[in-house]
Length: 110
Image (tube, rainbow, N blue to C red; front, top):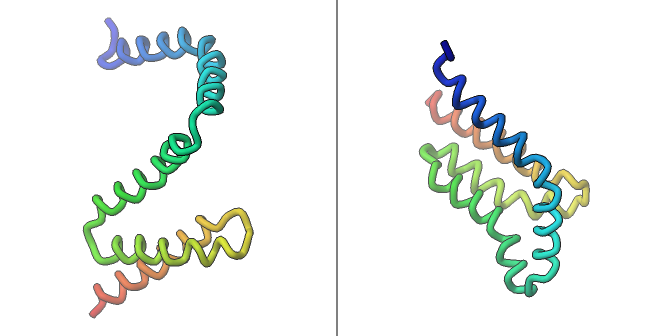
């Protein structure tokens, strides 16, 4: 008797094993297509990831601490980028998140 969910797992594993040899060819095709895109379209595609992330976080923000972390992160990111450390998003995210958490704790304690 096959356990519940085992068949789905086996089907997913088989699909992954079947598709794995084709992946490098698809990867190469993607690089060729990306290299031949017009600059305006390539810029738009590159912009999709950060704008989707930003909109997703904004849509799921519920409390003041969420909005504070988002706003402070947007303010701190350019300042952290000036340091040329390569981890500017980590620095701005940790700083903004820490301040927002402190704000949340302070408001809850009042």
